Image 1: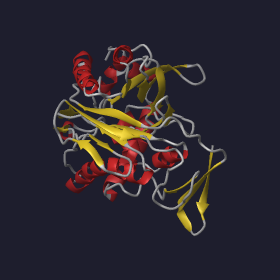
Image 2: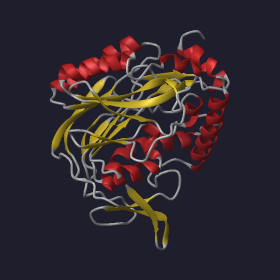
Image 3: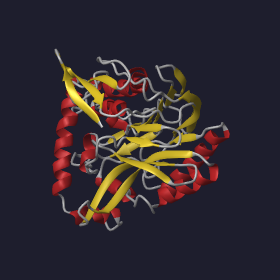
Image 4: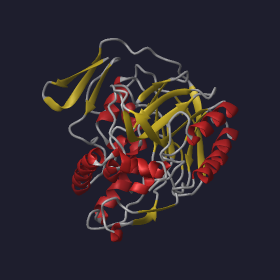
Length: 369
């Protein structure tokens, strides 16, 4: 387990030292695929069929690991109707489909779904919803899951913020230690710290990131800063953590109301795309722009677990200096207005999620509303 302490004279830089050495796991080259696709809310069967075409295309090009976008099967809505896509993690239609495909094609397969959880940590009946990443092995078995730690902006009205142990964003696999950052998480300071501390050798970044419509809530400068951040994140992580990065995003049109806001604030725009594969150190292996329904395939070399450094200080095997002087990583391009708006909406959304009765949420999930 890592120990965190402040570097003398550098109150915003943290020094991470390990009580035990993280052993080097399997290293070497791996061929990866990143899927960029449209996803229509309420059309799970159609979305899964489209995803399967692209997964098979990636495997035909030699991919051993395929990454699907955030919420690829149920679609991305920021209103209560989005809960209709919620499903059980283990036996829901998305996992049944993914398990069969991974087993048939003998690949590692990952993506996120809207998880409907009916049992809380204390065993009590709940009706909670999480944005959950899953990673399957070539035998179809579940290697690990990651629940999105911080829902972004209006997502906080729809998803519960989970309680997770340190290291939950790194999954140990026969390939090596695979780090996971779900969309907005990649802009937050906790993620690079955790990835470095727990020896991630490859980073997967599934996204559902649209281009917001300019409005009084999101002025043009704020919208531009969000898109710019999405474009630089893969390269920044690859450079600063010295690990290869697989970044994928949804594409195509995006239409959604915003929960609690009047209809003139509805979003009618597109997803930003920009799917890419970046080698350790930051060199682009391959990428695309806003094309719909495309798969990007490339070969990367997994990083050594004893070779992690993050900009901000620290050196040597087993130690990393990470700049974590606030909520966001220092390389995000978010304007101050966007940061304040996101923070306010996230806090409000978390309170509303907590206080709304379970029965209301369950009505959407079970198709009664």
